[in-house]
Length: 364
Image (cartoon, rainbow, N blue to C red; front, side, top):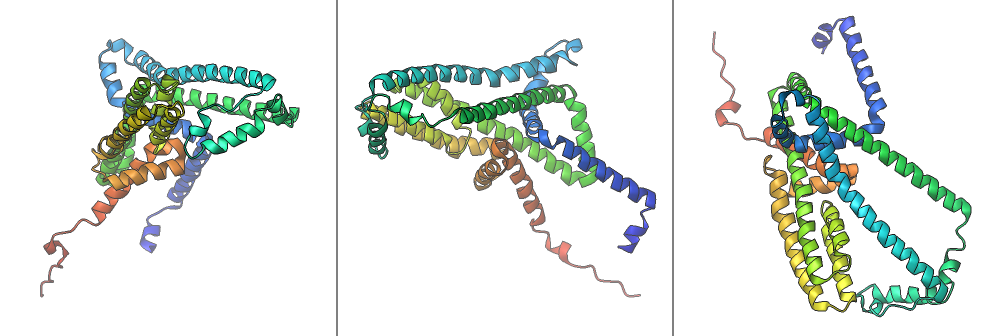
């Protein structure tokens, strides 16, 4: 310890302390943007091979600024357009619901025939309906206690949420553009830093984590879209109400653990409420097969294939990351599990027997 400290001059120690303070201050300033920056990094890693092919297909004078701009806009539209279409569809459904509530408040609303047929929850909903929705003006009386101050607070919170979401979106898109434009040089500098600090093993570990993030994006996003598409076709064939909207929501929920089974259960309940029990059973069987194959075969192979991550660690990484970091943890969790498992394999790898024997000292 003394020898280690003696190698450090006061100037070197002061420079190290100053560097540490600068790093911590910078991280504190950026702490409010960790989520959008993380999403931009995840999207850049996931789509980098595709961006490289796109960049090479353009003229050389377009590769500096136009290529990242066009690709960023394309990625943004691929994510934003489905959300906008879903929001428009939900707005239509909300307008229909408001009109139905207005008509029901004027003349009262009887319990629908299918309500009692819903398993488990049908009786409870029907009883609440009879107590709160049957009489004329019941809906107005139900919400009469909501005052102006409550509505103002709800409006304020909604405005703050919209402003934060818009800021989140802008920071993510802007960061994504610069990552595409300067990603190659930035990646080389990161590799140099990792190699200097952690050595060759650290560089290999960081490469595995990049593969894990890329595999997770394929396993989460692509598999989710595939599950949503197949189940959406099942909804359309079996006559589930609003099959397009429910299929889009299923694709979104399929990216979250246990999200697809919940959406499938809702679709089956809607069919049962319509009295189409055979279609409900058929959809349940078909959807269960699709979800089982996606969750137990496709997703683990895509997520853990490059890093040779066992299914248990893929499972724990997805759920643990989701519980710790939110939706972003779906991508960060498996990457951290790859690092953990790689360290475990390296530290516990059996060594040859002769390497553990000490060489005998030569006699003088």
